[in-house]
Image 1 (cartoon, rainbow, N blue to C red):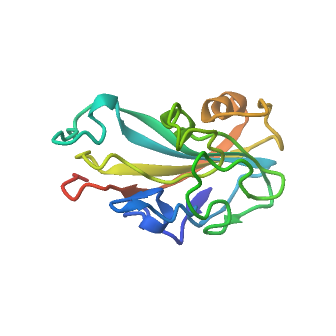
Image 2: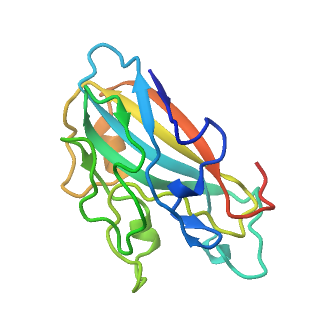
Length: 204
C-alpha cells in the first residue's frame, strides 16, 4: 500500500496553509491532500492518523522568552488528526475538504468522507483550561510547534488498511482508542511525512 500528498513532498516542508500556526499567528489550517492505492485484498475500511513524534517533554520551556529547546531533549507524540471508518472505496482526501481555517475551541463536526468518524486531536489537552482556546478539537488541526524549538518537527500521516468496516470505539475517541481497536485488524500500513518549524535556527 502506498500513500502520497500533492500538498507537500515526502520528507520536505509542509506549507503554512496546512499549519495551525505561523510566525505571524494562525495559519491556513487546511488539511493536506492525501491519496493512496494498492490496498491489500480483504480491505474493508481505513483509519488515518497524523502524528508529530517530536514534541518537547519539558512543557515549561515551550515558547519561553530567552530559552531555546535543545534538539536533543527527549520527545513525545502529539496527535493532529484521528479518523476511523473511512470506507474501503475511498482513495483520496482533497486538500481543505476536512479542515479550512482555525476554529477557536475546536471544530465540533468536521467534514470528512461519508461514513467516517473523526476523533479528538491533542489540542484538546494542550488548550485545556485556556479561556479563549479551550474546547474539544475534533478532526484535523495542523502544525504549531514551539517557536523556540531547535528541532524541526515531522508530521507522519499514517494510513491503516483494516479487515473491518467499523471499529469498536466510544462516541468520543482518541488516537489511543483507535490503536487499541485496530489490534489484530491491520492488513497493511503506509505513511508519508512532512516537516515544519517556526524557528529559523531549527535543525533538520
